Image (cartoon, rainbow, N blue to C red; front, side, top):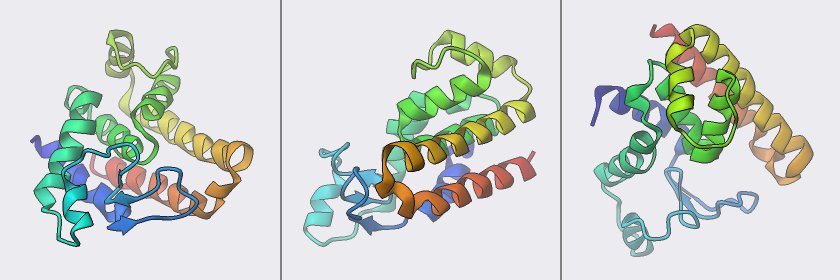
Length: 173
């Protein structure tokens, strides 16, 4: 696992918590942000069902294999890959990719291909980070006010996370 991944993973886990089954979350039952609905075959569910602790390396490995690597975060300039990873953990890979595509000025199709990667690599990192911040906030405003009123309970936490992770990453540059 890359050093970049390990650092952002620790930050993301501060926001993901432990076991949650909130009635307003369409992801349903989650453990450290891993949705049973989206990932029913994750090995950790077996231990959770048995009321046994899940090894941290299982969670870390899940996020590395299922999010970090498919998003090709190590191929992106820092801290863009880290910020993309954080958003994907919260909103899903396809949504995160669409938002970085909008920020980078390419077609927002949710596919992380050569056009998107090229646009990300050619971008001024600071400008792209600020644009991505705005798109993330806009996404949360839109889903909360226009699409799913049940998300209102999560809104302030999402905005706080978005800004805190952004501030942390930008202070590391």
